Length: 479
Image: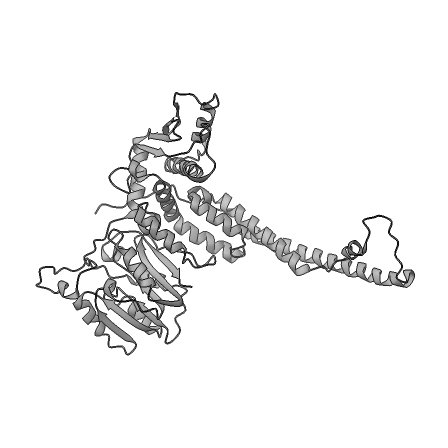
């Protein structure tokens, strides 16, 4: 296997002085607390004055204006909720600080549209940690470590939006021409709704990818050039424009054809895609196979392309999980127990299913009173919705993992959680099967900024067992 290429396009810019950011935030919050105290005292004094005035007016009122009434007079001195005011100010301040950090580190430049919109939603809903000195440092350290992963995932997502009919025969390789469908409306102008809006944003993402890989920050040139060329009206003849990276032709059917002018940059894009999707892990166990099919000496004997889960991957899988003593966990593709063993140490009751007889026997060899082992093809086991958790590393080949996930979900009790190690293509693959699975998964997504549907594992997490495929963790919750 050749060495993986190194991509520097995703590197973050060294951030500003985060110590000064933190200090200025603390000072601003202190000053606002002081101001709120003064305002609160003023409101209290105003209400006290209204009470004192009753000794002079004996309850009489004089309306100098039609708008004066009891309701408006009462509104002059409302109850002042200083805590609510401070909370609103703090949310606004913190969102602005994170916005600054995102802009100055150029984080958004390596993100695709989906990631950028998700980040914006988090900042709007205050679903972000407080920008304290420790949190800023921790976040920047994490993002710096994940920058290449974020960039590569953004590249994959950008091209996954394109119609597979216009890709090469390789689902994860881009040819010299791309077609963006329905980007123009009937009048020949950019479409800002539905499929057209999606394709227009994808076009911007594609341009961003080429610019990043070229070491530039040239965004928006293509859309501007097309808009300028089409100002003369919508005629029968197609519009053709050229930019630094592309030749674009616009058609009356609303489609945009894009040719890549730089073969070297196209090669870089395809190398990123190849590095992101990684090697395919073959899968030997079909839905109809029996455990006896895999005994040595039989016609179908094979090793099921077994790749044990590395300890670091298991640690990532179990991150933040609360395993209380006696909790019931299913491991439906248990192998030789890489996930099972730490669960037993944490006090869980584990039911393990493994199709390969030799590996099932190795699991039984653990001889743990909280472990039950079944040698069976998991896809043929009838679901029993009794488990608090399902933790799994299913077969990766093609989309066979999707069958395992859908089946495993049916074993969860209400409120249960499923976590699965999957190939990166599960998150960004563009086949109908991938998209159908993701729509289903989104219906069972966890909530909260710390609980995401997809979480990247470190690059080459399976390198220790001879595989360089990129992987993610999928987390589902059953209501």
